[in-house]
Amino acid sequence: MKKRLSFYVLCLFLLIVIAAAAAVGAAWSWMHRPIHLSTDRIDFVVDPGSSPRTVARALNAVGVPIWEPGFVWMARLSEQDKLLKAGGYQAIDGDTPWLLLERMARGDMTQRQITFLEGWTFRQIRQALRDNPDVKQTLNDVSDEELMTRLGSDIKHPEGMFFPDTYIFTPGSTDYDLLRRAYQEGQRILQDTWAKRQPNLPVATPYEALVLASIIEKETGHGPDRRRVAGVFTNRLKIGMLLQTDPTVIYGMGEAYQGRIRKRDLQTDTPWNTYTRPGLPPTPIAAAGRAALLAAVQPEQHKYLFFVSRGNGTSEFSENLSGHNRNVARYILGQNTRPDSASGSKPEPAQGQDQ
Image 1: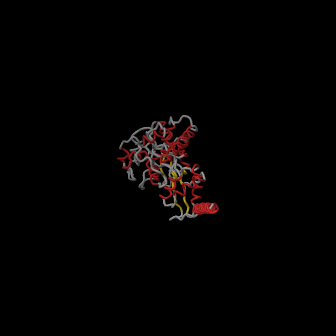
Image 2: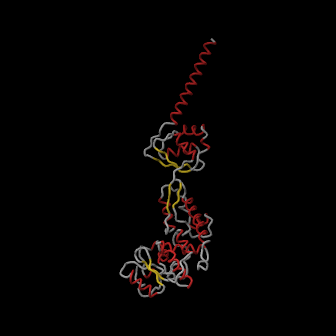
Image 3: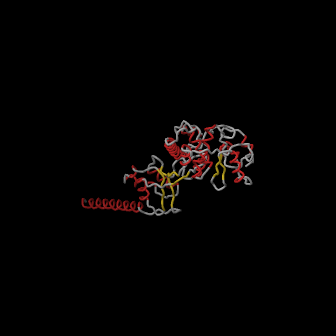
């Protein structure tokens, strides 16, 4: 009787061992079995604080078929559950569950990039963030003033406060995260540039320099002309002459601007219209790049008060109105474009044509 009982116990033990071995083998096979996706690659996001179970659910939700209980136990038994890092990742066709888990434990994230161009308005920056499918939208109901307060800024108008550059990010980063980076970079570069300013400038604060730089940014994209254009505006500010720069008029027009400026637009007062108001406008009118910022605080020293576009991206400069009018006659008359603003002298002859 004892021998038979021992035999049954041994058989049961062997069955358990075989079952366990089979289970281990099946688990091992599942861990290293390639996953077949509907596309070559699928992006997914691991949110902060995610557990193996929420990760498995996120994978299934985007089309990566993962057996949830198996993924949970695999992560816990390997203690990789303690190493999961939040961020954006890619599942590649042929990946195994184990490779996916290792990728998240290492923090081997995918990267994306977004570019804010020099001369863009804040509206264009926000639209670029909205149009990017890898950016998580969190600011749709947040006002501009609330955003600036959240960033810790004393300036409540967001225009010009976000540095134009290319920013690398992981999918799932928020619009606020990217704006915060652009704001901090802008503050750093502005302070660094302000420290390099020339003496006796007509701009008294870094913010005023930023306002002037934004106008320079919109007036010329020709590198060799930037400091000379900056010098024209500096000379005008020093003698109290109206800046009379078209980009400020366009900015003040807002959505009413449809690609043309007419004489009545120049005469319609807005806080940004430098044909009707002296000095700098109250805020920047666009995002200024590093070169425009440097030009604003290191303008070329000359006697020019006017400039006009040659039509090829460069500008022709003059010291007085008569010289300017000759340049207008040479480069502008007969064309459907206005001279570069900062040409001033409205409503003198050769300056009153509609754009």
